[in-house]
Length: 238
Image (tube, rainbow, N blue to C red; front, side, top):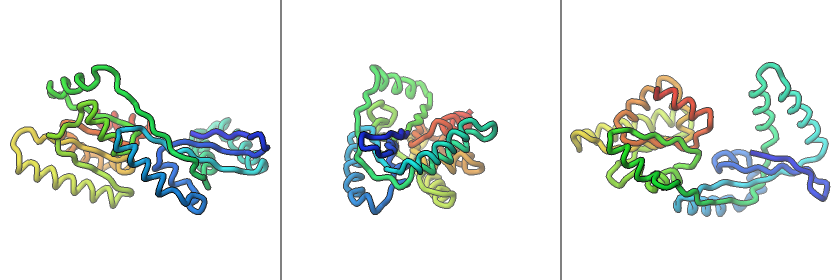
């Protein structure tokens, strides 16, 4: 999410906030020598179950902004492929960013969320959580809402690109088979899927393999899920 403003000095500045996985792809490495330190803090915040965001900015000339703004207006009023054109221009302007800092907030659950989820699981209902949080934060929240327990063996599917995700799926299948030899009946498994992996896992034939694993798990958490992906996951499960 970004906003472009003109500050009191007459400078045009873009301010943006977002998940670290998104912002880090758009920063200028030379302008951000303290990225490693910032990410260390983010990791510590996530371990405490806090929801984190990176905040960044970019200065531009008025000519740069005016040229972009006109093209964005044209895209916003386009008859065909409006959304695609707008997203392409958003990606174009959200580059060469400089990190300002990080935020971390406690997102408390509503009353009785944990006991309710525990009761649903006891009734044999499998629960899926689709969240925008990173894996570490999502796991901590999973424990706080009683979706995850120490008895559940966590299987993580992660990776970028088809080859990495396919390898991760194969490793997950091996862990499931090993669990079958160790236990009879309830396998007590929980599946965690990263946002990068989910991009590939929603495509055939990988989606079918993912569902075979998910079908054997008591709980599933999909992390870094975009709104469109949430709809796609629901469609896949149905």
